[in-house]
Length: 635
Image 1 (cartoon, rainbow, N blue to C red):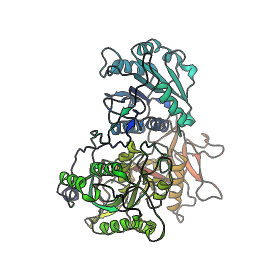
Image 2: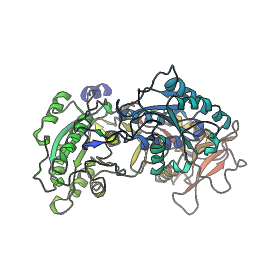
Image 3: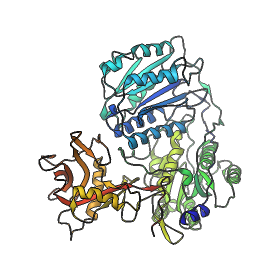
Image 4: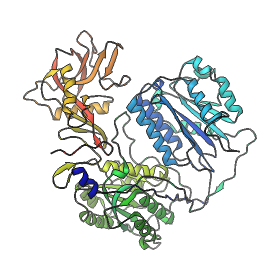
């Protein structure tokens, strides 16, 4: 009955929207160059861990995020090799948002299904059958240079050498191959044929140097085939439109204009670095976030000064149009809102006469609107601004702190000169953690905002005044949700309440989670960051009166069949370990406990224990409920 009330009361629409891509320069080059490009993502067990696969995908995102995808410019095909123990290769993409979603699907497959053994020869044969050969499903364009970039960690010399003839034929047909060798030396690939080899060491995957990206781009993609010359710059209009299909979030939105000013953006903006630290690296379970299932009330605060520029204002309206649909709200349907958005006189043009900054007034008005919106729904303020003033009565920091203190989130999007990051840093003063962005990351901005909206939902609130309920991502009462560096994940933890052997505790976790997912297990520890989180959580919940020492069992044990340590959730290739001195020690037992280091509070080390004899408490883990996995509210 609660679910029926939810769907009836908070109904939503799934729609498609057209996103105008605003180009401010009069002339531009296609980025990186007009090519048909195929990129192979290695998801095989040669990559060792899903963490390394995730870092490989981050590298490919960094390589491709600013590319000019279009049917007449750059086309990009992505091949997933051995993800879910199969090959995935579709037609060429001409929409950057679809590229991002495809890469994310590879990442999730590696995390959920693990890595499977594979070889280089099969990868090359798939390329031949799907893209290059005479019977290929997806052929190239006529009179366009063709490139293949293979990310590979395979190291079998005979396997690699067997591809030489095929790769030579690729070159003869105009497909020049660049191999990005991950954790392998170029000498391993000397037996095959390629145009360029780029070496990336394992330790370099975490933070890939720009020089490596530039080498792949310049020497592996944008070099000229024999007989080709450098093309002339392409003329770009100021109203080029591409059609992008996305599932916008379900929202109620009201517009507010704030008067600000700054210098005009340059005509050839360059991407600036991310405005906040990268997300923690690791195969943490992300909360599923189906955007059309979100329920958020949003207030947009928009700068209409000369500094924003007409192009910037158009971009803001396009993003708002893409990110929002309405019901219930002041609008009966999305078409009505779209018409109002694009004809609102406050947003038709910038005001060249405005020379003062007053985000404080804009946030004050936003706070009033938040108070009149729906009860029981999380709320967010999105600020688009080209300047910032924190002096005197115009200082917005206190009113922003009040908004955040009321449980609401603030997202900032700064329109900033590419040579300067001072505005971005200033805007961060009013933003919620990890929710300050910059307009010069256009290719990722909508996806970043959607992700921020999903993070807005990760709080518990009251629905219908009867039930505690969280429609996107939450843990059952008493379970703690994983939060690392201000980002929340879909993992929940709960300490057992009685002393028992490791084996007995292992079977207790599914019982503790039976009212939720029923898939609880002893905790999986896959990074130092998560280890610290778990230690702190356990100490906060340590039952001092009934447990002498705050030690806890983890889901790690020695498997006699494979003769190595594995995790109860099936992971066998986790690179993280936290053993105490002289451990592991099979003479003491085959199971593992986290033991508090003497003289410390939250420092724990792993020790070997007897699975049936040694007793203690355990720390259980299960998945969170989210927008794709519905859990009924608790009574």
